[in-house]
Length: 514
Picture 1 (cartoon, one colour):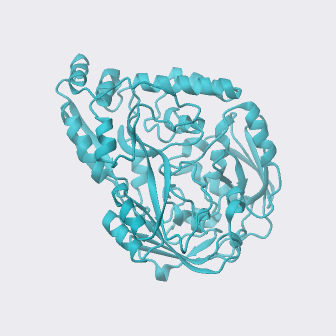
Picture 2: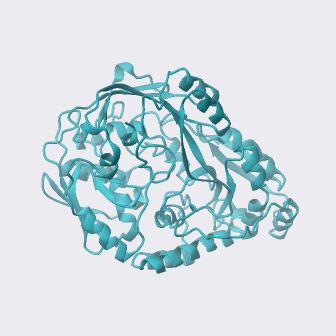
Picture 3: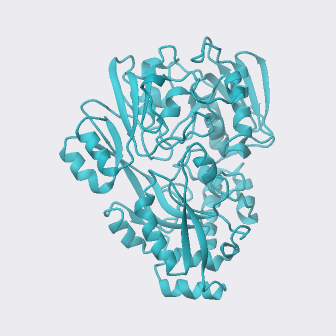
């Protein structure tokens, strides 16, 4: 979820090259699969630690992208999303985009079956997309979609409007499942065609999830481990202990634990693609009237000491930032001077000018595994200086992700992953259809530039993206704090991670482990 994942091309010319690549036949795996896989290995068990429990139940629309190994294990997708913004073959062995970037046509591999023995065919793909269109936090991405299924192996998926730089992500997200299973809606046990099958006997919900290899998966040779075990370890100290005592093979660790982990002989793979921020999504003040005043949003920006956060909360392994986009992406503005330096007195003055000197109450959702235990005390303390009272709203269980994205909470504190291609990030976070634009509120400035981006050349697209970034900064749609990353610790004697497939640069994908 973390967001939730893709790097995409943002121009008509680049899209043409992308489509040409998409039309080619696959010869045994997607780009990531063939880039470093050992192939046909016979390793016994891969045991991964997860810092947060996935939502209870196996609804395909409630699976997180962040540490989403459980979903990646049991389900295939029509195609995969690659780091460079292209799609690679998965259930579909060939595919192309036509009809002015509105139609995605795919040929489904012959002979594929789900774990219940039913065929993976065009009816299953159609049903899976229809399910996503009606359930979960991304329904707007599939509004008005129509399908043609001339036979069991071919399908065309058509959107009512051109999708431009975001089509690739929309076709790689839905998890492909049997129509009857989706219709029944009994998601106690997942049914898919992925590289692994859930082992209920070895699974204890909330603690341990066990899987056995699916030898019938089309790409089974790429996954060398015969068994996969996911252990939920939310305590950072326990995570380090489990890794250093060989109870697990890999897990995310906090920065302060890196030295201890390396001293034990484990390896560290550093990912850097996150920005810690408040998402101030109620720009129009429809839920909380105070948030509709730009001075209030600017005041919130100015009450955080970003340099101190980088040092004290992230052990010096973070950088203060005034923008939410990844360094080096098209939207990122080099040399930007922070327009909201830490200044509590000026922040209080802005609150008074806006008529909110007495502050207001703000509910902030909290979830395990999102570093809220470290961040929330500081955020609560600083907002209190503006008389903004924070009430924490714990989210857990099967509905946690849906509640987070529902719009119930107009402000969210999150370490949100940033896409390597900022066009996709703009769509997700700033357009009315984006699932991280929690209130889905329109804005004429952003919406008009987004429409231009759908057919812009690369140089124009970059210019438009930076204009959007500057506008987001001026209007304080976010309160960015620090640009940071994650530390993924692993047993290098047993596990190798030769590829990085996560578009948000947060953790390895399941297909990266060898």
